[in-house]
Image (cartoon, rainbow, N blue to C red; front, side, top):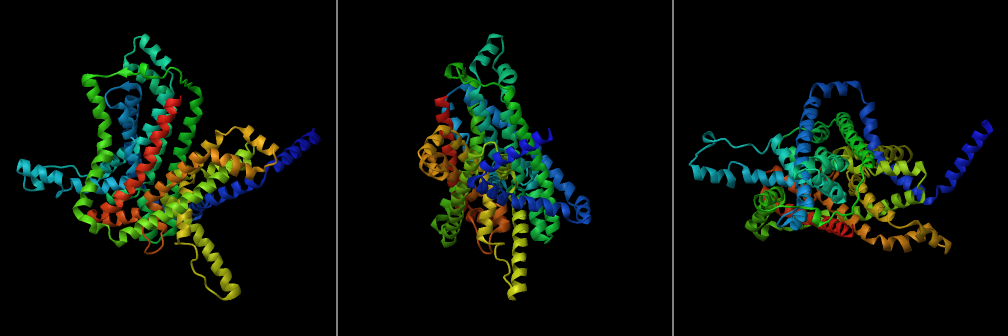
Length: 562
């Protein structure tokens, strides 16, 4: 029996060795490189002295945990209500304008939350048009005469984050509703269920895995937000990490805070994975899901449906964009000065480099996994490294600085010892470090897109190419690449726009005197110079509209095919 077990282990190792080709090796190397900053955060956060933990737990940690939890609960409730209700209305109901609204409901994805924070602060502050108009109408002379809610608060941050993050729930839940069988809904009607009962008892339980997945994504983005909570003075983990590192210069405490934040993210990842596991218990047949099965709304019900769908569109996109455009028009062409174009070039170059590298690395990961589908030593690292999108930019920034700082110190020590030359910081605080941070953060976006395109290519294409003498690389370049060109273009666009909007990692890692559009908007807004911030803000929104249109087109195309 021992001989048989030994033979089994040896044969398994030989099988693994035969599968571990060059693509598998490259995929594992890329995965290890992407995971390095995250591992460094955990290492720095768990090996520091106990005094740091005690100091954090007795001072700022309770406040960070409380604010982060309240923010997550508030945003979670808001995105569920808005995302599910709008997805149900445009998918399962018919009313005037429903086909237009299903596309327009994605528009708030194009506007980062920190832009809304700056715009609504200008719009709702004491000297803004809203309060100014109220004082003029009612004859009020000062704040002592009336009460007006303060937008720069925890509640204000929750509302604005809900307005820009509900599309995460809306997207996945709408797809879930599209995939549900119309027969089950018709059966509930025949049993006497009204539309509300059919929604509550049939549609909603079937869409539960999608709801949890969308909720997890929205909450991850909530924990990643920096600009909104910083501008509103809400102390969370992201603001605490930034202030601890740069304000206090305490690397150990920043790593400790990043480690605690990672525990929050880990919980959300497990929640999302659990929802996927539960998805197998729900069957979704697309047959019969057509316009005849939709609920017809007219009169007051149709008006309410239109109003519910328009509220997030107007407040989350149209009104902020209109205010920004008004600021730009009022300032004239002087706002588009030389510094604006320089910042625009910086952002475009960074986004372009990251998008190109991100797609190349995603292809390596996806193709290495495709060629080694049963190899856990390839599949596990690839899958784990593809979760980088869940890691907040502030955590990645800490990991980058820790890992790059250690590497720079090692190089400097070696050069001093053998050549008596001090190299200083070669990588830390450079554009290369910033691009690396973007890749760690957004590689998952391109990987998921590339993998989805690659999975659609049937294995017999590979077999046919190999039978004609093509190796794996030739097959990828000559067969797979032309077929998945649409997916590659989508991945490039998604990474490009995400980099344009990224703020926390850019603030921490960017080289000295090197700004991007997001950083420039943040700096102007922090100095209460919102008119100067309007031009870069409009540029960010314009870039964000591109993937929104692409997403809506893909969903519409998929729904027609199915």
